[in-house]
Length: 123
Figure 1 (spheres, one colour):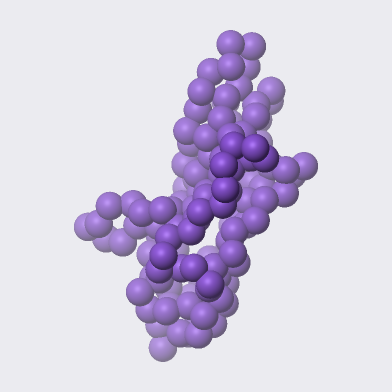
Figure 2 (tube, rainbow, N blue to C red):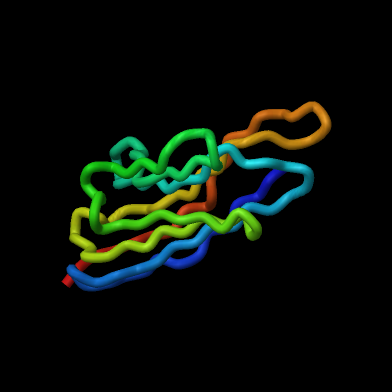
């Protein structure tokens, strides 16, 4: 099993910055990709950014956050970060960390979510 623990988030004025982090822990696991999604009330969860492991693809951003958000990974710490700059009110949402990979002797696939953290952009 793999657990994801998120931290960061909070409230900021428009134009401000916030950072999120998400650490994966467990035993005998490997990660294919880690990313961030967000969800507004009554709406579907949407991709914000995803960073695959080396050789498994390229980093991808939602058009709405390109140039403002930066996703990064520390493969030693199994942690993914999201630096959010020039925040807008429409970025207000619950942000969820996601990790996909496999674990254990049988290499069981997993696709886990973090607990979610609120980001509020308001004046």
